[in-house]
Amino acid sequence: MSLPLEMKCIETAADGTLSVGRRPLPKPAAGEILIEVEAAGVNRPDIIQRQGLYPPPPGASDILGLEVAGTVVALADDVEGHRLGDKVCALVTGGGYAQYCTAAALLCLPWPKGYDAVQAAALPETFFTVWHNLFQRGHLLSGERFLVHGGSSGIGTTAIQIAKAFGAEVFTTAGTDEKCAACRKLGADLAINYRTEDFVSAISTATKGRGVDLILDMVGGDYLARNIKCLAPEGRHVSIAFLNGPKAEVNFLPVMLKRLTLTGSTLRPQSVANKASIAIALADNIWPLLDQGTLSPLISAQFPLEQASEAHHLMESSAHIGKIILTV
Image (tube, rainbow, N blue to C red; front, top):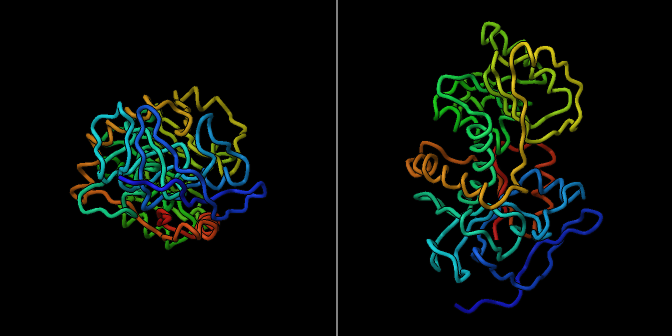
């Protein structure tokens, strides 16, 4: 297969401006494949990196983009299980906003049945993140009560569906009645408009004062103390982002009295081996549900690659419900 020497990509200036540029075609290193990108997901870490607050890990591309879908066009000699022409979606540490992107072969999964590139590109970042934090860190069990903040986000819409599919009672918060309605349509048992209602009181009423067993939080800041009030005995709190800031003042007496677990994670810096364990779990537990249509990503909007700035503006506005995708 003849490949070009250069590719189109989105470059980030020091002031955070995004523009179309050209780069040499990346070459797959050991254990990697080269994907001709058809679509790439837009995620909150892309915004933070563009703002200069989230540098890529050592060795990662400085090009934005943490998930892609496309066609395998080259493979390292040691790669097994993938062939030229395969349609895959991949979790990557950077480089997604481009015509070509390298990915660790262990972090590539096939497109679910009937999927196109846009749907496939909406999967890796959110599904890897949700599975890892709900089950590997949060130990969610069937029959438990689960609260996810930001229910209309890409993470939120995914978490609602997965938790519901695995037997949890699902609560969520969102900022408008329209977003709350969308969350209920996805399976949330209770969707709370946090602008008009106190979610702590709403959770207490809905659970008759017991609280929830697991909270997935992307807000941070003052939400941490309020979340602790919402947790049931032996409850778990998993932090994955902090839109309200990374610092919080916490009274640890209820943490001790209720025997709570406070934990958190970021996906991007983890080793390929750690992330590969998530990929295996997704292939075994989630991909069959995607193939059946039991689960599906909610797509809010798609933009051509050249309009990456517009895609970022939409994400920063928080007006979207679901995923934002760039098409290449």
